Image (cartoon, rainbow, N blue to C red; front, side, top):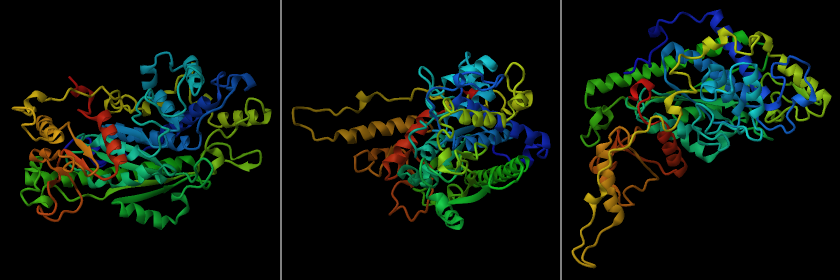
Length: 518
């Protein structure tokens, strides 16, 4: 078992100190400041002068509402990565909150590493702000050029299936997956909750879903936010999860207390994951034959530990948290009005501009960035060590891990035709034999995804070399043909799910650590 999957006690880490909590809070403030700056500013990045109309972009595009929650979560998972040496993907289902991922990868240094002209100083910060959703710049959503992102921010619904696709065959990888509560209303996401019935707790990595329950979509409340909490908890339990609820931002609780509560919750959840991994690894070692799969041997349940009840977090905070409480007399924070640009008239309207300046200065940027505009040292220290920063993780940067498959010569599988019309054969059956040879030659980096039609499409020769991976209940070999706890064929009826798994796997497949790429 990887050293990454350890409890906090096993890492020999000290108790959470006030200094650590303060660093997390300062990271969050800095990321929020950088996010608001990206949406609004094209000049005066550190507010050295009073905010003027020419400092504001002429057209304001972006999504503030989900962004502070994404920033909060990024700051906290940084600590987990550093303390546990845990390789982690940060998957943002509400990827329309593009400023958040850009801000945190800028603070951790990977953004400047990849784009040196966006330097960690006042000049670079100005360029960071101006390029956002600007002609010749970058999109307002998380996009392929966003460090650490493997899903397009505008296509809601695929975050969870991308996460599971990424961790299949990546046993050291954690996919910390933020699911928007609006996104949770989509068909692809509703199906994706069932991916945990296919996750092998020994050979695959771990997905930690975080349902970001901020209450609103672009113009309406979300369904998940308007059902009783117990109903939501029962729904998550029905999906096979152990849900934890975290609520903050709706009262006068101070931010230090909020951060400490969430840090403690995250430690509890990560310890639970480590225990699940330990139990599964011990069961696997006791059997000593999990690599073979055991359905055919009639010992399906003994192959590895039974399907775990994995933890998940319901993260309930106000939409647009720390933003304007009201704009033009209307409630903004904690409502749909904060979804996009709360102060849409900031360039033309002096009252909006004044309110924007107050909003920006509420983060006290003079305490967060030095005289040159670089993040203060205690903020920078919160970033994980080089090689584990989420913006640079090879699994998040498609192409870095991919290696050519061992492919048998297709000519060896050709059908010999002695004379015209002298042979009856099926093209897909021949393809199935070739795919079986590919699966056999690439046991840990080749999978076939399909909507319950591998056999009906005549590709069943695959079952001569591998099973269909299945970690849900099992009846008997007579009924459940070719099911195994480990397998290279993945079948679920949802084509959305198959596509999402495939996309996540293509991006993140391969050795997870950069020092294993040689």
